[in-house]
Image (cartoon, rainbow, N blue to C red):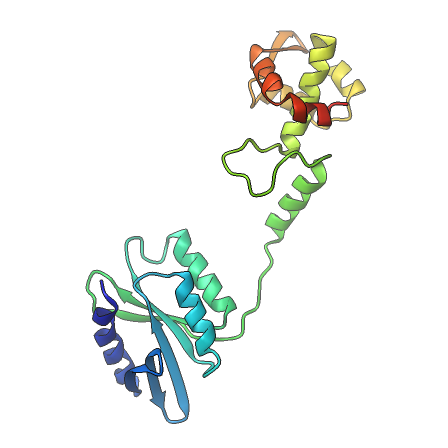
Length: 225
C-alpha cells in the first residue's frame, strides 16, 4: 500500500465529520479544519521513527495531531500495535487506522489527550526482587545472546560450588553452611541440570556443571570467593 492510496478514504472520513480537508500544506500530510479547530494527520504505511519525529513537529502547530497507519495482519492484538498506541498516548497524539484489506474502512482509535501513566506494581516488585537478589553485577549491559546471571542462577552456582569443594552433601549441610534461601527447591527442581540425588536428602554434581564451571570460571570466581 502507498500513502496516496490512504489519502482518499481518510479525506472521505474527515469530510463526513464536517471538516474541510487539504493535503500537503507546508509539509503537513493532511490538514483539516472545522470552525476554530485545526487538525493535522501524518500518514505512514508503517509505524516508524520518522512518523514520531513528524508528529512531534506538528504538535508545535496544534494539539490535535493524529497518526494514520494501515491496520494489517493481527489487527489490534499484536504487541507491536499496543506499544504503538502507548507511545502515541505518551506524546498526546491520536490514532486513526485504515483496514489494509478493504482499503476503505477508517477507524478513529483514540483522540489526543493528557497522558496519565499507570504503574505496573507487579512488574516493579519482580524487578526489585531480582535486583536485590543479586550480589554482584556479572552481566554486561547491552550484550545479546549471552548467558544471563540471574539471582536464581547465583544461588544455584553457590550450591554447586559448595558441592564441588565438599563433595556429595545433604540439604541440611548446605542450608547450614550457605546463606541461600530455598536451597532445597533449587536442588529438587534442578533447572540447570547440575545436581543429582546420591541418596535420600544427599546431592552431588553432574558433569554438566563442570562444563559450565570451565566455561565461566572467571565469573564464578567473582561470585565464589
